[in-house]
Image (cartoon, rainbow, N blue to C red; front, side, top):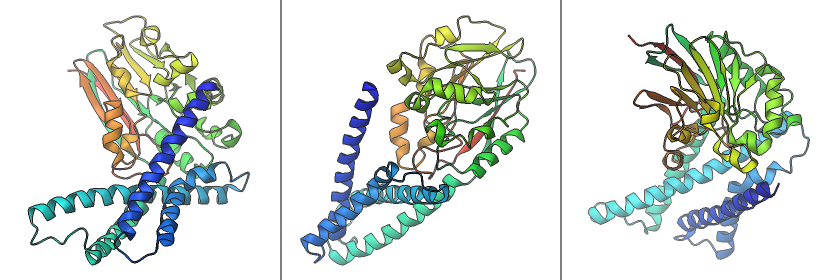
Amino acid sequence: MRYGFKMMLSFFMVLMLVAVLLSAFITLRLTALTSIPMWGRFLVAGGVMVAFLSPFLLRDGLGEMSEKWYNGLTYAAYFLFVTVFLLFSFMLLRDVLWAFLRWVMPERIASPFQPLAVMKANLILTILVVSIASYALYEGTRLPNVKSVTIASDKITQPLTVAVLSDLHLHRALSLRKLQGIVRRTNDLNPDLIVLPGDTIDDRPEAIRHLLPVLAQLKAKMGVYATDGNHEIYTGSDVAKQMLAEQGIIYLRNTNQMVSDTIRIAGIPDVQGHRIGQPPMPDVAMPTVSESVFTILLSHTPKTFDLPDNTADLQISGHTHGGQIFPFHALVKLANTYLSGLYRNDRRMLYVSRGAGQWGPQMRFLSPSEISLITIIPLK
């Protein structure tokens, strides 16, 4: 509880600082060169700040309203949040580029402090940002496509297919129809294994009871396996384990299981697990290394790929969402080392899924969601 309070307080302080900086910058660029009175500028700043904070202001104030109204308000609030963030990002990028071009070609480029030029630039940029946000909403709400990857290993005697459903983030605003579509599309792949490498559960049990039975429909010849992501730890990892186990999903927490004579699957908790006494322990999850057994490790955070006691042949991770919304890509890569896709380190491999769902805004830009299908074939 103490850890949870400290984390929430830190998040709130950072959020408020970001909101103030964003609203001040956007208001300055929208009104500084106009005749709008000071009270009007404060009104613009307040509107920008409320739009940016709207998802957090609404989250605990929506009560038990109907799913239709809850979803609509949630999506609208996050749309405003993302629009403000994109407006800030693109406005800052535009101004830096504008200043540079003005310095290089002063006779051809209008001054970034010329009122008419700034007004036109702001109008064009606002239209562009709203268009991008609208497309991002479409990208985030549609069914994820299947992304296929093929790798080879001399430990594999016959082809093995693994379907990856990372970062589903089951929460109250998630569409039941969308989840049903994800499960149906995954089952249509007829995989040998289905894995859920964390952040499957992202809400209170009573809020997502109607979604859980859909997961019970996941079918794979060798079983369905899951492990802890950071959001399972935030919402209660033991509760999440029980909820998924009730759907027939095998939970791996610093444990492993043989799925055939030559294939082993293991799982470790997210790196945040050490805060609640459940740290990731690859040496415990994979106590022995065999030259004849291919080991798949489910680890929500891709950074664990570099742990010295990580001996997995293939680590499957998520967490990054591939950045989810540009320009977060750079920050996400900086924090996690690995962003998305396949990485190799000698004979060891890491696959980072962009995820089949989203956290926060049900929106994506330049990082589409995916159902990953990894096919492992014998090395010739």
